[in-house]
Image (cartoon, rainbow, N blue to C red; front, side, top):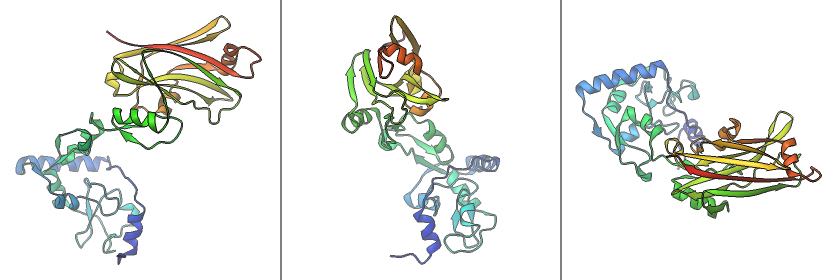
Length: 304
């Protein structure tokens, strides 16, 4: 059924995720509300109806202080207030600067399950502590580590391993050593130069080996690096080495694998891996220097 409020429909049809504001205003209010709640209210489990009251009608995200309301009592999050040009999206009355302190106080008394409950987190958290927990929750899903496309799949490690194998057709290997040969007919080109990653299974864990070309200044360079399919604190338990060479010369890199919490681009752009300049890569390739032929060897080991 069509809404009687076309302005509201337009806002709902173009959702935009807006993070809760981190202004001093919000932090002070949050602290004051929590202080008040600790003296007068005990945390209670939240019902679906109360949760709906705390949902912004525009972005549909949970609202955090300052929560605004119009003269008719319709509420709105502070992130969406500028988007509606100071007009209530429900009744079109002017919003002004009215705070809904009662709803903020109600929120301070609530406890909510972590949004990653379906991934295994069974914790229940106070409303104003929930966001901080979720940003660090050990059960929060990982992004797909495949670098050859803008893949939006998320999940736990077992599901991502299956996804890489079935959907991206990634090469899967068992063992802690590797010996790979990378060949490219036109080393002058950088476009579409991301090679398919390789996944290694060893020590009961999974590792992603990336090798690709990217532009650095006026010429492409090649980089190889390893990412750990897990969190950073676990990644630090492992080390790896990479070696590339030819014509009697070689380059060696040793480092700690980066967690896939860090995006492929972030790791690449930090140069945290074996970097080979194009001239050196062509020298290692031998021949007439018109074809890239690099053999990258390496191993992974667990620190004692």
